[in-house]
Length: 156
Image (cartoon, rainbow, N blue to C red):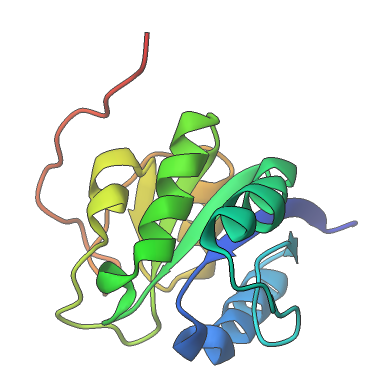
């Protein structure tokens, strides 16, 4: 049986680059191969102009992807870049899925993820794949259900 393949952009902070490989491996073991267009240490961005980075580097990579995955760790909430990527994806009708870092505890979600996420799931391959494929669910880092979230806002 052939594996399913999805184009994604993984929004993260660079200190979490090592976790991206673990995420890809987890998904691959569970039957989903992802092609990741995000900027990371193996695909660096050497530009300095923030407007150029947003319009000419990040936007096309997010446009290419069908889903924006947000890798949620302790410092993700403070990243201006992560919040911008989420807001851009939301404006362009991309599916937005938060994935808690493996073993995460006491992490806060980025503000834009709280507002625009379609799903936020724990470190479980099947839950992540279900979320990428369209299942809207909200989980704590351990995979258990979290408190109810407000109804997602839709643009007119």
